[in-house]
Amino acid sequence: MPITKNHMNNPQSTITRTILIVVGIGIAIFIISRILPYIQGPQLSEINIEKQQLSDEYWYVIEGKTRNTEMVTINTINAPLAEDGSFTHPFALNAGRNELSITLSNGFKTTKELTYDIITPTSEELYNSVYNEVMEEKTNLETEELLEEPSDEQTTAIDNT
Image (cartoon, rainbow, N blue to C red; front, side, top):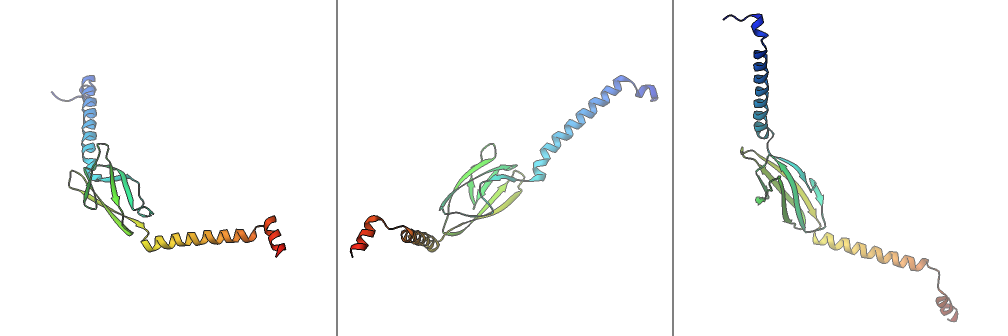
C-alpha cells in the first residue's frame, strides 16, 4: 500500500511515533546515566584538609566524600567507604612535613590520585615557639610592674629608707 499524505496524518501513527520518541529518549537517558560515571571517573567531592595545611596536632582524622568511587586508599591503606561515598580515616602525623596520597578508584579500573601536605612543628620549632611565648609574657609582666603606680606600702617603705 503506497504511503499517502492521509496515511501520515493518521492519529494512530502519530501516537506510535510519539511513543517511540519517548521510549527512545528514555533509553538514551538510561545509557547516559550508566556511561557518565565512566566518563567522569572517580571524584572527591568533599575533604576536611587543604592542599597544604599547618597543624599543631600529631593526630588527624581525615574525612571526605566521593562520587563514582568504589575504593579509597590513603598512603596505600584502604579507608572504609560508606554507601553514601563518605570515608573517615585516622592518620598519625610525624614532626615536619607529612605527605598524604589519596587514591580513588572505580569499577572501571580508573584511578585518580590526589596529594596533600600537613606540616607539623618539629620539636625544636615547638620548643622555640613555647620559649618565645614565655619570654614575651615575662617581658609584658615586667613592663606592667614598671608602669604601675607604687602602692602606699611601697611608698612608705621607700620613705623610711
